[in-house]
Length: 151
Image (tube, rainbow, N blue to C red; front, side, top):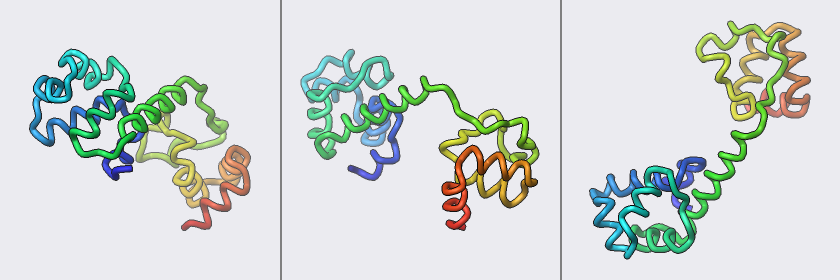
């Protein structure tokens, strides 16, 4: 997978396509006609209102020099991200964790799964025993030990 595509995991493939077209100074309408597609179709995809399909993905990839399947991989990752957003957010017992530990970020916006290593390190560097116990209970001793070992 192209490095620039792997960075874009979780965003709509149309947004990636739009950025790529701008970078290459290609107009959407002209590009659509070049790959024998309706300009409205391409516009809907670049605005995230329509999903990428395999046939269109192959045309775009061939014309722009990407590996086959790159845009469908982006579509799959985007759909996975949408599905993850539907799940309930699982958090530690926040009544046991002082907000001051995370003074440099918005406490309510912490992604407890995505940033678990940073959270664990922060709590074990600056937290009290109750906070350390809660983080260990939430993530599990093995995860905490692994996160602290990487330091």
